[in-house]
Every structure is written in C-alpha cells, then in structure tokens.
Amino acid sequence: MEKNNQQQPQQINIELGEKEAEGNYSNLAIISHSPAEFIIDFTRVFPGIPKAKVHSRIIMTPQHTKMFLEALKENILRFENQYGEINISNSMQNGGMGFQLPNNPKDEKIN
View 1 (spheres, rainbow, N blue to C red):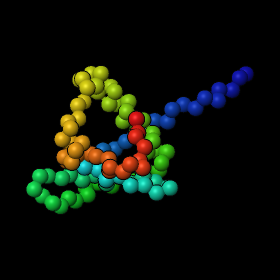
View 2 (tube, one colour):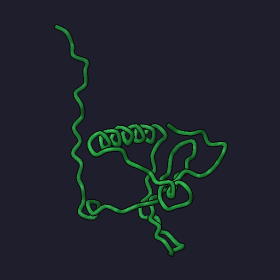
View 3 (cartoon, rainbow, N blue to C red):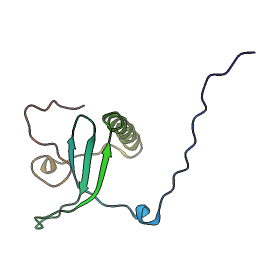
C-alpha cells in the first residue's frame, strides 16, 4: 500500500468585521523596510490640506511582501484583461498625488 504524502490545501475561514468591511480609501502609501520587515503606511491626501493621517499600517516579512507583489501583479493582469489597461497620467508621476516612488537614482527599476 502506497502512502499519499500530498497535503490537502488548508481551508481558512476568514472573518470580515463590520468596521473592516467599510474599508479605508487611500491615495498615498509610504513604504519603508528593515532587514526583517516591510512597513506600508496607507494615508490619503487632498489638495490644499498639508497634513495627512495614517489610516492603516501593514507590516509584513520580506517573503510575504514579495508574495503580495506577485498577487497584485496577477490581479492587475486579470483586471486589465477584463476591463482594459489601467492608465497612469503623467501628472501623477510628476508631483501629483497618488502612490509614488521616491526619486532616488540609486534605486533600481522594479518590473
């Protein structure tokens, strides 16, 4: 008799609380890291308001952060296949509000 060493996928029951189900809008993320973790602070900024409050902080291991990046890439691809390409305007890249990378020539381009 042969043993089946394949593990069955673990089923996880995820609970979504009422407050969390409302969600938080964010148009700016500040990302920092150490050797042990990535920290992503989500906030929102509005024209004419010079102050922004962090509404959510997510802390992940480097491995989970990379897995999250791959999951985002896959979901963006699926979205664009269904609804068309997501366009990013030049004003967003040149000092407008939104999710932006710092202008550091030492940073390598991430594809």
